[in-house]
Image (cartoon, rainbow, N blue to C red; front, side):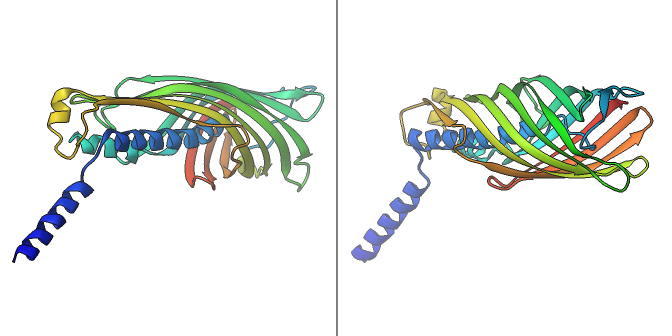
Length: 298
C-alpha cells in the first residue's frame, strides 16, 4: 500500500508539474509570437497595389493616358496562439488563436513614358488601439509605404496574353498590443520587404483573370515585452515563478529565407471603375492572404 501511495503521489506531482509555467515559458511564447509576426509582414506587404492587368498601358504617348488611383483592403492569416497561450497561463480569456491581419491602403499606378512599363505606389496608416469586436484588449498599429515597377514583355496584342516582370519594395512598422485584466503584452515591429514577380493576364471584354508568382526576401525586427500585475500572478496557480515581466527581440535577415508566393484572381473593368479580387499563398510559412480594391482607372 505504501508503494502504491508513493506512486500516486509521484503521478500527482508529475501531473501538476506538467501544467506549471515559469517566466521562461512565457518568454518563449512571446518569441514565437514575434517569429510569427516576422513571417506574416512580408505577406501583408505584398497584398497591396495588386492589379489584374499585368500592365495598365502607357501614360504617354497614349489616348487616353493610362493611370489609376484607388483604395485596397487586404487580409493575411496571423497565428495568434502564442499570445492566447500566455493569456491562458494567467487566466485571461477571450483571445482567438487566429487573427485575420488587416491592411487598408491608398494606392496609385501610372503607365510608362514611351516604353511598356508602369509604376505603382502605396501607403497606409492604421491605428486601432482596441479592436474589441475581434478580441477585447487587443490593439494594432500599422504603417507602410512602398511601390513597384513592372515591365511588359508581352503587351496582350491579339490573342496573346499580357506578361510582365516586376520588382517592388515596402517598408512596414507598427505594434500589436494586448492589455486586459492586469496582463500587458506588446510587440513592436519593423520590416523591409523586397520582391520580384512575374504576372500573366488576359482581358476578355470587361473581365481580366490573372495569375502570378513572387519571390520575396525581407529583413524584420520584432521587440517584445510582457508584464503581469501582482494580483494576476497570485491568481494564476499554474504560474510558479516570482518574475512578473520579460522582454526580448526576434529578427530575420535579408536572404535568410526565400519566400515563394503564388497569387491570382480577376478584375472587372466597368468603364472608369475597376474592381479587383485576389488571393495569395506563401509556401514556406503556409500563409494565405486576400485583397479587394476599388479604383478609378483609365
